[in-house]
Length: 181
Image (cartoon, rainbow, N blue to C red; front, side, top):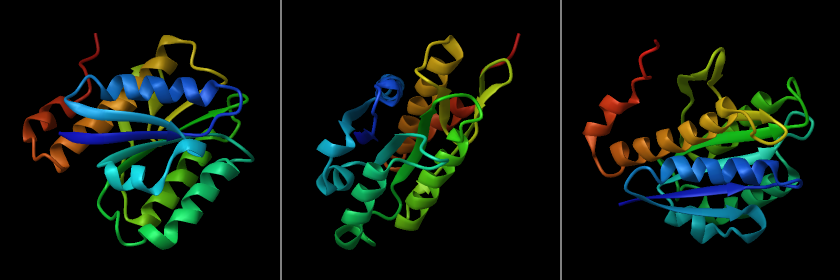
């Protein structure tokens, strides 16, 4: 059974709400899911997980200092030990155009440096609403599209873990976006 860690930082609770929606999506599949605030996460959590979703508020177009510090501090112990794990990103910003897609790219770039296999999602969860670099929202996830973006990200992470780690190729068929009406 695949294991998924949703690790996040949150000051106002917006990114935390996103984290729980990502976990909700992952739990639709036969995987074990842990949700942890970055201040409660350990390097053992990273080693435990087959896939991780990393979420951060957007600060100046990047991830939070707490998230960056966590990954900086574990790098010496985990460098070369976590290659091939699957990862994705999500971010909340103060408003649309607040840099949350850049924050997701910032997170993904950091994860690539550790050897994580990162992915984006091509599905549309609403009219003109997709999550190529990860799930992004302005403020807290309120609309159905915003909630569905987080849920879809968790679903995809679970599917990729099942495909890559557990060799469950039947989940490849489900990666296709739903037909539009």
